[in-house]
Length: 62
Image 1 (cartoon, rainbow, N blue to C red):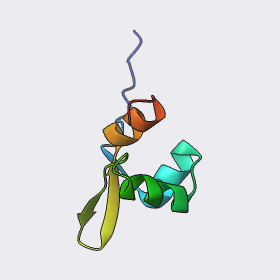
Image 2 (cartoon, helix red, strand yellow):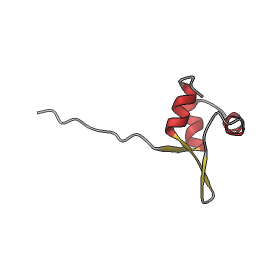
Image 3 (cartoon, rainbow, N blue to C red):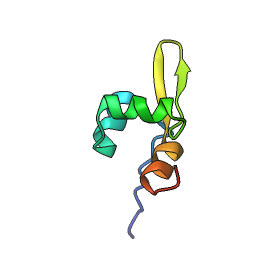
Image 4 (cartoon, rainbow, N blue to C red):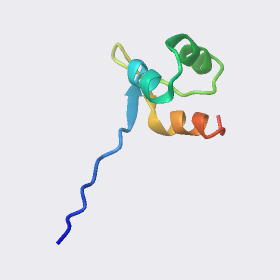
């Protein structure tokens, strides 16, 4: 019997994580946020980027 291994996908990325997974630099990410093309949320002192927003940008929808 083969058991499927389910790897949970992140709901959001830190700015550093978003840079790694998208191959974009910090400055460019912050530019995209300022332009309204990429969503960002502040939770406490942390800035997080919803995975759906990053995926939409990469897919050409943002």
